[in-house]
Amino acid sequence: MTQQATDKQIVTDAPADSISTAQVADYLASHPDFFDQHAWLLEKLYVPHQRGTTVSLVERQTSLLRERNQLLHGHLSELIEIARHNDVQFDKTKRMVLSLLEAQTLDDVAIAIEESLCQDFYGDDARLILFSDVTFDVNSLRILTKSDCSIVQPLIETSLPSCGQLSEAMNRFLFQENAARIQSAAVVPLVKGETLGLLAIGSFDPDYFQSSQGTLFLSYVGEVLSRIVTHILHQPRT
Image (cartoon, rainbow, N blue to C red; front, side, top):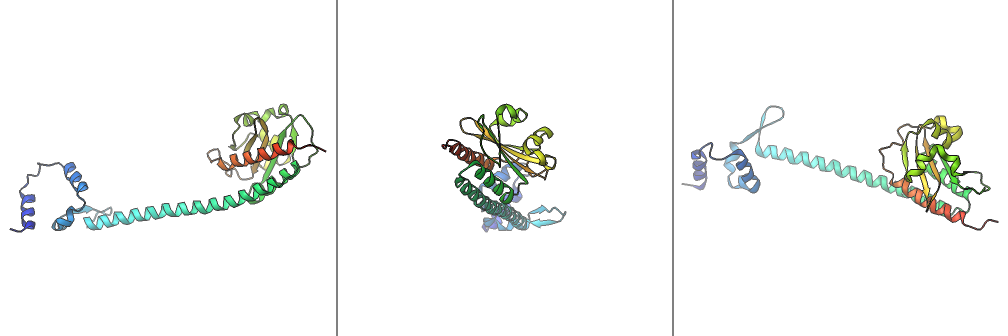
C-alpha cells in the first residue's frame, strides 16, 4: 500500500471526535509544510468565500497574502510620504534658524519670524511679545511687563506650546487689530531660565491649529528663539 493510501486510510478510520479543531489548528500551525506532503487533501478542503462561493485553500491563502501585500504597500507609501514631508519641514526650519542667527536686533528677530512662519509655514499672523521692565526701541514686536499679560497667564504658566482655538479675550490681546480673523492659533512660551515672552502664530482656518496636534516643531522653534532673544538682550546697548 502506498504512503498516500495509508494516509487516506488513517484519516478515514480516525474517530471524528478523537481530536479537537484547536488541536488540528495547532498542528497545522506547527507544520506549515503539511500540505506539501499531503497534497491530496487540498482537493477535499474548501473555505467559505466572502461572496458565499467556495475557493480552495491555496486560492484563499494566495488571496490573504495579496491583501497583506497591499496593506504593507499602503503603509510603505505612507512612510515615504511622511519622509518627504519631513524633508520639506527640515528645509523650511533650517532657513528660519539661519535667518534668526543672522539677526542683530529684536526687530530683525521679529521680521525673520514673521517671514518664515507666514510665508514658509503658511501662518496668517505671527506676533512676538517680550516681557521686560526695561523699555527698548523696537518697532516690530511688543515689550510688556508680566503684570500686563494676566489674560494669557495660563498660556505662560504651561511653559509648553498650546494649540487650538483661544478665547476671544486672548485673541484680542495677542493679535490686536487682526483678532477677529484669527480662528485658531499656536502659542509658544519663550523660556530660558525664566519665561521671556510669547510667540503667537494665528490662522484664519479654525482647523489649522488643533489641540491634538504634535508640538515638537513648535517646541524647537521656541528653544531656538529663546536663545537668540537672550543673546540679543544681553548685548551692550549703545
